[in-house]
Image 1 (spheres, rainbow, N blue to C red):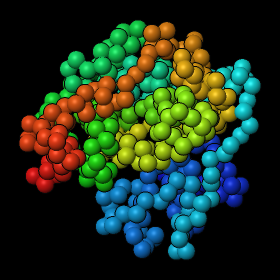
Image 2: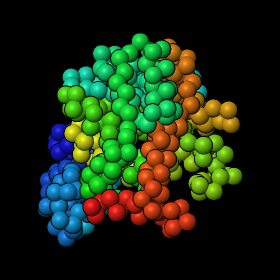
Image 3: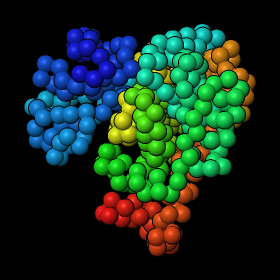
Length: 358
């Protein structure tokens, strides 16, 4: 069992408790394969034989994902946990709960063998604040937004920062490894995974075997623009901020599978304190105005960080990692240089697949 003791998971099954107090788990209990409600730990079984399973899809001939919140046995899949829908808390109480949960989670991280993936924004800043002696790593092409933001934020926090500058050769080398590890070759997943993989690879080379990340904060706390006015945004089906936020949270299992597998392929074990059950529970109780407004996103999380982070870090607006690091831009450039022009259908995807064939 990854992420929790077998007896602990058995108790969560018996109680039907989807948030029993872990940062995710996956594995076998009493002949069943189980994966936590947010899919924070990937889990796969061989198609047609649930007895053959692994947390690494490359261990299997024909891996079949175990969905989040599911128990799988010889009879098939059964949903055993669903994301709870607790009552909305009073605003002041809600912010205090977020602050307590976040600070407890980031300060509870063991810093032995740990580095921090740091983009200079709110999420990675909170994670970094919890482990003041851990080194920070940022990756990107020269001149990229994330590198500049991380340098400024590390200076404001008086922290040691390692800058990992990508090259085109790095992308070409990493893409086939990523496709094999995550089982995906679509450009979006590869562009997102590349900066994580290359950051983790450098940290592993430097002797660290664990990498703390800020994953989950955008989904849980209203970090996406599409949740601000969901009734007018075609990217979500919900028409309320809270509804749209839950819709976004539902995408976490797919995203986390990609990220965790990419980081492990690079040689580190991910640590995601902002995805601890206590943080998830506090986030689910937030009223809409503490999630996202027309003027501010991740409202409660920023308020919770008031006495923890410098103002410049607490209020920083970040870019999506594939754009903030220039990974998307430069992968597109490489594709065009290799003859895969933009007028072609899925030109970057075709280029990614060509790299895997070499």
